[in-house]
Length: 175
Image (tube, rainbow, N blue to C red):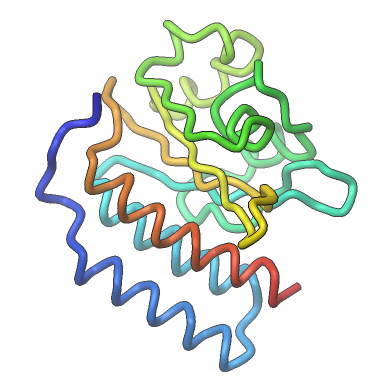
């Protein structure tokens, strides 16, 4: 079960949400807006975490929306993944529409094919929240990687829910 943390603060998340909404109004690119949201989630998750926002493209495949602190070779390796309930956290969250938590890549068979990728970067666990439209359609995922074995805190999950709702607007309104 997620644990409490002092890292995520409502004012910080609310500030990022307002900034992203302003960016939408100002005509910023989708990547700029999603990078703002990903950076806020990283800050809320504490040092050593990295966030990747994946967006489902017109062909139904996961594509990088914004991953400011994840190396491009990792992003290239996961580019064009098909949503699949039995694969990783983000592909699973995209397929099921549910939050998927993987405290350890070693202990989760959904990572059997891909675990070498995040482990090579020093990540040992992750979790992912689907980004959904107002109608409930999955538009993408908000994935957080950790360098230690742990689950997200309740505050992290609440903060990412706010940021994911804002990401849904950015995905729907921008290209």
